[in-house]
Image 1: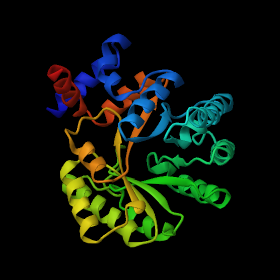
Image 2: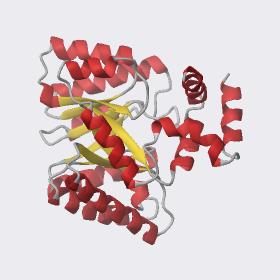
Image 3: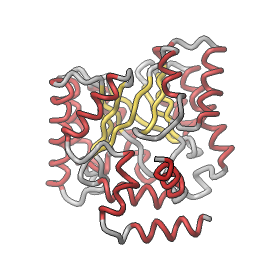
Length: 299
C-alpha cells in the first residue's frame, strides 16, 4: 500500500493544479489574505481561535524573504483591524534561514515588532533537524525582546525531552507535535507507539514544569489520554490549549472540548504556495492520499 501511495503522490506532482486542488482545498483557507480572514471569522463564531500561516518554505533570495516578512507584518495589522481571535505561526526557512540564520532572525525581529505593536502572539514553527538549534537560538533571542513568543518541538526527535528540560520557564510557550519530516533513526523515533508515548510524556513534562503547552494532534485516543491526565492532576485551563489543522475531520471531539471550556485553536494555512505545500506534505506522508480520497467520497 505504501508503494501505491508513493506512486500516486508522484503522479499528482505532475498533474495540473485543478486536479490536485481537491486534495488541498479542504485543508487550506485559500490563496489571499481575505480568504484567510473569512475562514478565521467563521472559526471564531464557532468558538475556535486560530493561528494563521502563510504557506511556503525555503525562499531563495533576500528580496523574497523581505516580501514574506512584509506580508506577515501586514497580517498582524489586519488581525488587529478585523478584531480576529488569532495569532501567527511562521517558518524560519520562509524568512531566509536556509540562506543565512542572521537574515531569518532580522526578519523575525521585524515581524516581532508588529506583534508587539498589536499586543499579539508569534509562534516560530520548527522544521527539520538541520534547523533545530538555530530555531531554538532565535526563539530565545526573541523572548528577550517580547514575552508573547512561542516555538514548536517535535516528539519524534530523541532530543526533545532534553530540550524541554533546558527551556522550562514561566515564559516557555511550546506547541508539541509528533513531527512530519523524514529523519534518520539515529535522531528520531520511527515506531508509532513510541512516538505516541513520547508525545504524552512531553506534554506532561511541560505541564509538570512552568510552561504553557499547545497540544497539537489529531490522534483522538491520545487527546483522551491527555485530557484524563489533565483532569486527574487538576491542571489549570490557562496552562494549555488543543491545536488541530484546519479542515481535518475529528467527529464531534473538537466541539466536546469547547463545551468543556478548553481552548481549541485551528492552524489555518493560506497562500499562493498551496500546490507545493500540498505535494510536499503528501510526499512526507503518502498515507494522506487515502485519507483525503475517503473524505472526498463521503462528500
